[in-house]
Image (cartoon, rainbow, N blue to C red; front, side, top):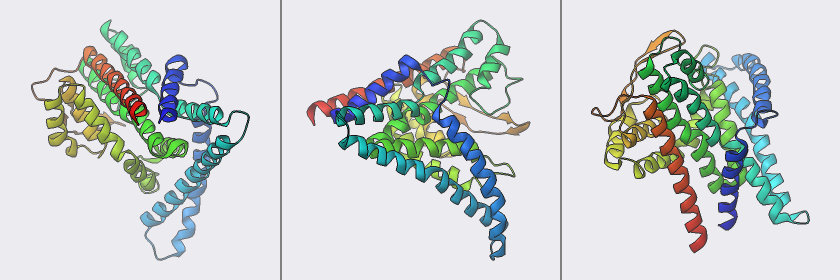
Length: 323
């Protein structure tokens, strides 16, 4: 357990010190590879039409095969590297520890999440809505051009709470469960969901596997994150919002996380918004008597994420100490 705690702590320290890699990030190269894989398999789906299958099912089969080709070889390669470093070299234990920490560091985005949030809150507090909208557009998919102050804060607070689970705690969870291969599997799957998981004509069926597998991998981490939010915020409100509102959200994992987070910091979130020019009605999240979202709500969400990360590190330390 000391090995696991040290890896997680070192990864967090690396992330805090260096933030996200600005050049030669492995996920950028993976994304470029995924684009080519998608093009190839989306063309190859025509081969399945010779079978007595619907077009939708042909697209789902092609998308599933593309996911397997993109994810499994790299996951297996990470497993082989981890096994090799555990038994080879002058200091195999140290080599394995550093390799594990670097992989986890690449997979998490704590400092990046805080930086994006700060880029929104700083101009928002100064009344510069244009700069806030521009910074918000970097992390959300909704249309930001016409958002007012409360809507900007609403979107940013939701993003911080949701990405706390996706960008930090899910990666740590899968490292605890499966080590380096678990981290690689999760982060690649999450990246493919962000690339292929849209309900557009091109990806509606092709991206089905990417979306569903990401939902599966996030199921337990999301609920553990929601429970952690509740533990370090307004617990009663967080648990009540999770129970009553989390199931109504379009995402089975984002709903519990954002509902619990909204209840924990006592802010009203959710509501409809424009996506690609189309209005989408969305349920409300958080206590009805909660505060309207503002720059302080974004700060509160960031503080909650920071406290939960500290809690997870403390729990890992105590488990290592008494294991």
